[in-house]
Image (cartoon, rainbow over all chains, first blue to last red; front, side, top):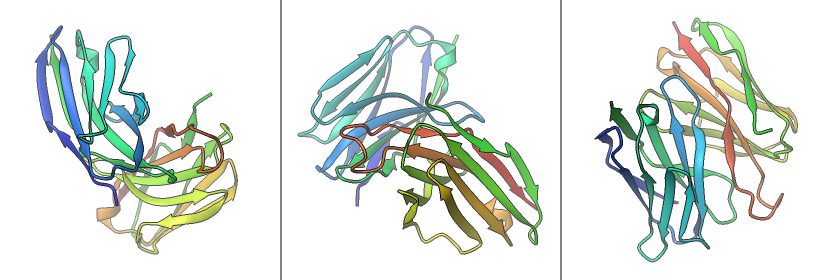
Length: 112
Length: 117
């Protein structure tokens, strides 16, 4: 089955700095890579995703990059704000399946 | 509309009680999921229903019993739970494989915070 590794487990930045979270996956048949943000006590919220036929996708201050050869993908948050503080999970979906395999999560803390 | 709803928000139950969690979506999704989430951990898949049929059971103890009455509803029946079953139970939905080309997004409900005493 698929295995997803996520680093770092915690990340502290100052407001305005950039934050990068990295994930690697094991199965080259994976074709969809979403990122979820989960605030304390709330549901995981889909914030951005990328498919295997695309190398990069941006949405305002967040972007995701995918390197299929190296089997890794990354979340980039620019101009971080305190409200970006949350746990971020990456995930991967195997082609032909609907289930997701999640990374262990990264706790991002943005200090004012 | 990308909303998945769950009831109740909070549930406290004793180890001899029987209770049910409910989940509903109206996005036309034919895949629905139950996850268990412990604090600071990723969601852990429990069950998957695809086209109202149970397609995946991740070796979940029989004290958890899922049910999918129709394409919009998903229930999780609880009986004789243990204190270690206390967690956030999340429902999610997505297009099922074969339902729609290249539509993969999976959306979560707000969860039920379960405490077993």
